[in-house]
Length: 189
Length: 290
Image (cartoon, rainbow over all chains, first blue to last red; front, side, top):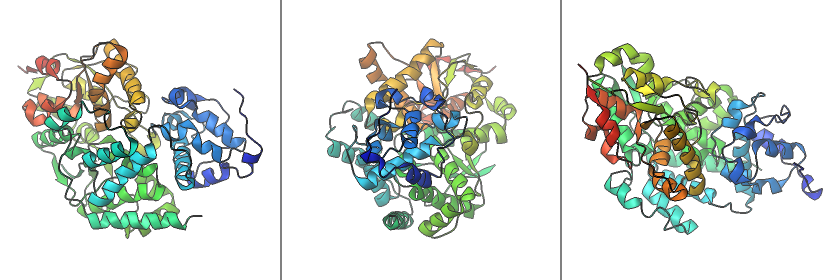
């Protein structure tokens, strides 16, 4: 496979930033591709872990943040588990996601950032995940209201989905964590 | 045997059956699970996909509560287990991370609280011998595919759960219950759980391949120890059917539900009525021990 990197995109390369954020050195990768062979979503993402690493080696810039694997990655960590050089690729992807969030950019198919926002905003309010509210928020935001509509009545009937919001968490402590972690994010350049 | 119990958010929603069966089994075996008062969400995938410090701070706050109790923490959800283990690893090996987490949580956490999955406690602290003696019923030779998924076994150096490529903890429990643990290649494959709402098509494909492998190995059910795996494999069988045209009727049961049945606990107390695919064939194979 040929990887083309545009000259202008190589001005600000992501590799040092990603390495610093993740604490992972990518220099040890010698492209054996065991990570890609085991990646369950390399097909639908139209990209693979070893390819992302190679692109970073070759000076990829912000265009990499729109690569399909960035938000398709399931964090199953099969790549890390099988890497002969013990490169934590899952941490690399998490760093790319953080960068994608801070720099904006194209919303990926399925809108995982919206899902994460809905999940975390419920945790911030209730101290625990509130599935019903989180799912409703995601579905409204993504316009996927009718997906799985057939399953919810059965789930509710079987008690597989709590109707009332969760209670019992130390909400003050959780709010403090969100506020202070958010401030920390603000401080980063 | 006394532990600090962290149920996790799914225990009160999509995995009430996991919570019900885990607590019923613990009670029957004399394991005392003391729920951590005021526990909060571990942050799950959403936190670590967003911010590394937030992702370590949420579990750390809970483990600080467990530390005050002076007990090992027992977890039933594989995702909570993973996030807590990763947090322990990060704060104990990265001084900078420990400092940032301390700043966010308002208290320093050194990563010293032992985090264990309930199945580890069953195997290591209770032991197979005592379990066998406690069983009043047997699985009657039921063929069971043990499914571990990702979050228990990876990364191995962090979770230290059994073996990353061929774990056998669930298989050993199945055999002890008089079932037959099948050899199959899907044990540590990913069900796709993280994309359940966002890219359902991918979940149907990945979970479908796991269920197909279990069917091909002759399993009568799949047993799990993770609420996300349970939800994907159980809930998505209707979609697998639509996608492939084949009929799916594979019960996806928590290991604690099987254990509960063998301890003579009524199915309803184990939440078996909550499963999407009715576990009729599993219930039919249960026999009282002579």
